[in-house]
Amino acid sequence: MKSAIARTFVLIFSLAINAGLASGETAPPGGSQQAADEEGTSTDFFVMFGSDFVRPGLLPRANYNIGLGHTFAFLKKDPIGDEITFAYTYENGGGYGFLHTPYGSHTETLGVMKNFGLPKTKCVTGYTWIMGGITTMTGYPAVLNRFYDGEALGLIVHFNEHDSVWIQEMYNKIVTVPWYTTASIGYTRSW
Image (cartoon, rainbow, N blue to C red; front, side, top):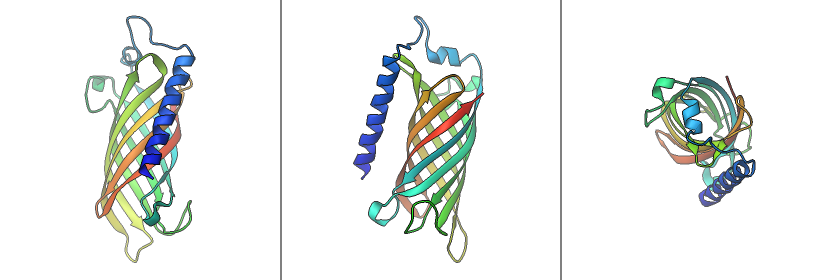
């Protein structure tokens, strides 16, 4: 199942790159999208929908994510990240159904995202995203709180300077739960 997710991610990546090349949008000579981005900061509001495959049998379960991120100009040269994020994620943790069951995890994270340009296109960029936070697992006799670690790799398809779609693959780790992956797609509004 993980190889199918990886193939899907590579296909989406290839389509996004080809769409950017076909549109004829390229970085200006002697400059780049990254140079243009260094001029200021931006704030991102994102909503993502996805599915994870953590349960026995690798059946998909809903994963919803909403958050805010802010890019800081002074962090543009930082190799780890230039955008600080705060996000809330709900995951269906039940053994049945896709959207919601009484068993779920509610995660609040603080993260750092590194945005980077891709060669020969300015309508598609990439990012890495490292997050840490607390997961509250519900539906059990007692509420369980656990440390959460998430690491993502993704693409941003820019429609204009304010609207974009994020496509990502994330590796998640909750203490006491094995690593699992989440594939997501979502809308972002920037200002």
